[in-house]
Length: 468
Image 1 (cartoon, rainbow, N blue to C red):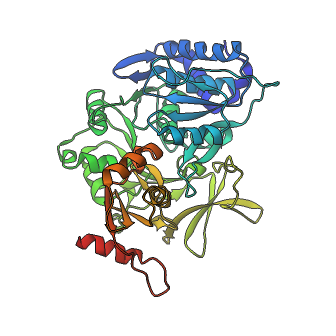
Image 2: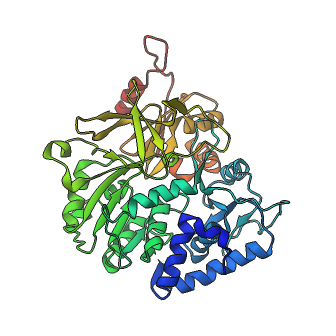
Image 3: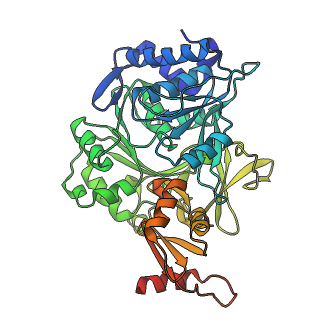
């Protein structure tokens, strides 16, 4: 069996407890195939033994993630082994993957036989190093280099304590969760580990096809009771929401980007028996750290668009700066980026606060309302995107100034040029940026307008583009 040293990790402990309590209960449903806790355990044990037998001593290990049993079993095996996992999405451009691998200093990458990538290689260190990291997620950075966010086990434990508190949520082993996210997106941690911590089932969404249609199919056919998704899911559904009736859903969570009130109202009509939450939190505060039960909002609060992001979790403290930037301190806040960057932290009354870069307004009752980004960073389909990174890469390719902005969740890049070859530019850009960062539209202006201070007049550029 597994070594005792790893039993204290929150992820591993929950899985092991339910393996012994409910060995025959369904743990995962992947592409309509069910795996019991006992069956999943065999795959986890196999990978764990492979690590142990190979003398692997690295504390941070990469996983090429797919919607398959290997990926989920590998995540659990690494948690039990005492190592943190770094999810690698094979659909990312090779150059970006290499940056992530280098930044995380990965020596070992796990992959299934189906993934056609470089072969699995083990490199041992002189001593076994068991760190306190649970996982490392990479987010977009304005410098063009992905930012590595090591999340500690105590950070994850604090999040799980919040969601496993029976006074707040009455999840049980009878619940059916749906895992709507890529494993390289941090909210997948919630959708996978909460059900495995309580003996419930987790249904994954297959890759390929139209994802939101696959989600709808699973929701209806499997009588899912708990769903977490990005608000863009509702935008993709469109008018289909009006035709939906999902009485089995007991809990619905949204996070990752702003939630429009009109979409939320339509969704709640389709879920007559559900509690619907809008949540918020950057990767650096371990998935989400605020939330509000939309069922309890007043008529006045429903008129706020996008909807409020709620109240801080019980284990979190927050401050709002003079510039209206939201800052957090607490057990869910990470320690610092892999590269040691500390500019987004400050001390106040011996507490270390993280500056989120998000602007908020606090109502008299403590309700937090999102007011936008302090910089050009946006979230689309749950992915954090630095518009400046897109402009920087595109500027290098096209050898001209570039301004990038977002309209209706569509990325638009404007080149300061009289003409350009869109096919050639897009081909080069696809090698350097992931699909979710590729502009939907390219256009150009011969000369960018400037404001009275001699700076780029961003609003005027947008107006000029609208007239084209």
